[in-house]
Image (cartoon, rainbow, N blue to C red; front, side, top):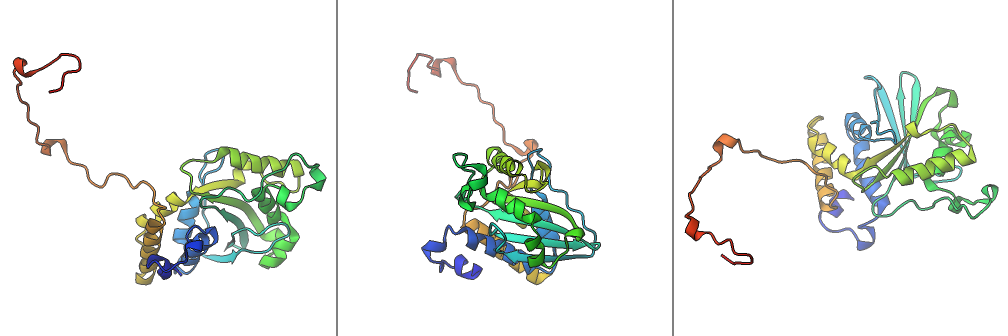
Length: 257
């Protein structure tokens, strides 16, 4: 599908599809020969304490991807299970492009009567990280879970504080799990692009896939600021001072030279 997009063969109905964006980016990351780039991408996540996501798993790691799993009360875009040192680390990922959360907390309805569509989307996805049926779906044991993390990906340039805080309030009010704000992270699509263009690791096939992903981001205008490409040393600048005759200056207000 990424080739169809790069060559302009994607229907207009898919151009702004968040599912298409998520499956293309993380689907390609899944097929790389190593997980290093995935971890670098996720490590750019930031929580409400403005702390980066610290990922350190050691050399022997198994990563499993579950796209759009049907959980107890939601269907997140992606669940990632990282197995390291006999421990499991569970990551929920919800990705947005131009839209906001599909549902927010409806405070006009009694707390115990709110349906899923009246609950905050991220809050529901966070709560499902603690549900036994999720562990069965992932074929893992609750006792083996070392950490749970939720990552919210958007096109914004800065931390969406209000949206994240609303989700955390919803989790706290419903009191269904012990999740706290240090476990909820925001990630920008633009920072993923920067990670991609910085990457030079992997075999030839990996680099070809990453190159296609970079082109995909650029075609979708998901680029981040990459800095100045070239600085000119000041000693190479051609400075020229020229004396201007006072008679040639016109200081009258509103005068046109």
